[in-house]
Image 1 (cartoon, rainbow, N blue to C red):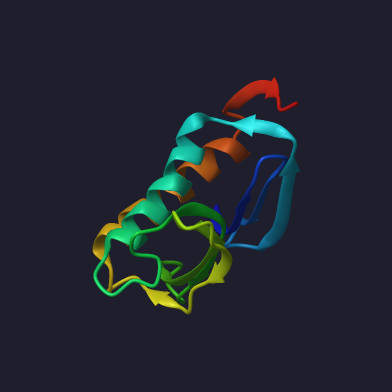
Image 2 (image 1 turned 120 degrees about the horizontal axis):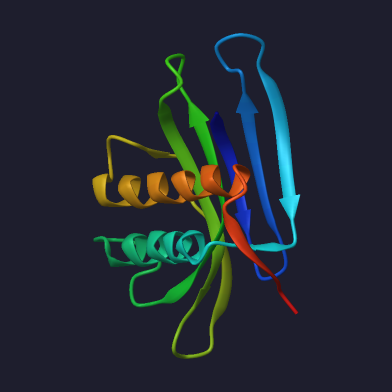
Length: 136
């Protein structure tokens, strides 16, 4: 299974993925109002925290949420790059939506680890491992 898109917000989890990538690839999108395991939400939060704590980051000193991860793979089905988008907030009341450029996996090791953690949680969500309560 290859997860290429993760979208998480308060109301919905949507994951785009490909199955049978070595044989006859089939693309799917899983959309659910069920809560994911807390680890998926934590992973998305950790991505923003890691990104904001890196040197020369536009989000340094802010807090925020990653809502979307779009992942591109190379011919060997390994992650080549990813794009993050979400919302950031500053202490002075600034709220801004953002979208990064392509982040290549060889550039930011700590961030890569956090993105891989989110991908693993997305795979577990697809396999049915979720919180069974619905959000109000």
